[in-house]
Length: 341
Image 1 (cartoon, helix red, strand yellow):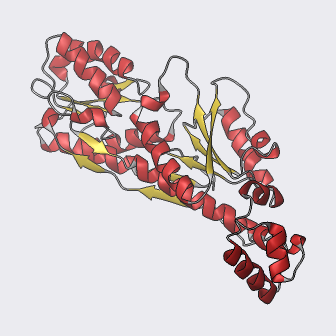
Image 2 (cartoon, one colour):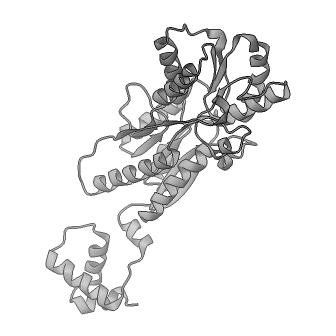
Image 3 (cartoon, rainbow, N blue to C red):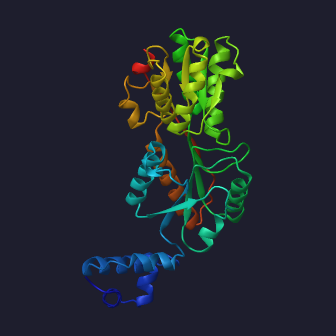
């Protein structure tokens, strides 16, 4: 492998010129650039990637901010694992490194410090919510021009980069499926309203019910926290009202599976005595008995799209091009299985 000095001698330029060609930090005559590149190719010279990044003022890291929840195995959660897989695959393909960053609930959020300290060049935010501290921290990133992207979360009136799924449509399709099966009094186990995707699912449920001419009853709305445990806890409340509930729609598969377990322990047969539809199309939905009807959400592709578009925006900014926030919403679709036949 040749050295920078050898490349400079072969091309008839200084070592500093060789560095400038590979770092791309200053304008360069095309003829000079070509001589350097040809010399480097002939000698098998490969520049130091870390040095290149330093010269450009870049860390080479794409940060992914995750919520830290004690005693919760975050990476075993289908939602996070799929999105992270999509991000990781894209980052690897584009020559970046991935830096995972955890935020604890209740702690003051200062995302901008991650950029100022040189740890990251851009960030993807997972698990963001309508928390005043969170919104203020994101607002600071926008004001200082630091690139970031939200996944599965959006804020009304904000033009921030985001990749989301059409949860209104997904929820609507789930409830319409139950309505077409003859169900009328459909209970809904949702997640916390701090998340935009929870509100979107509620809107889809509401749209389907009102379109069918069925008033939405507050007594049929239950709240969990997207955990299996919260679905299990909802089972007893739903069991107590079993004579007035035709079916249950749960806002994710984990809650649906916990609900199925709880109802089975109380003597009800999920999918036989009570139709159930989940949401996510997780791996676990294919292992339940009976198999869980659910809504497929393209989490892996959401991660891929967030990473590719954010890094493209970052590259355009570095080249001096004007950039605008991107906002993309991916489609969902219903997957009918045994719990609603």
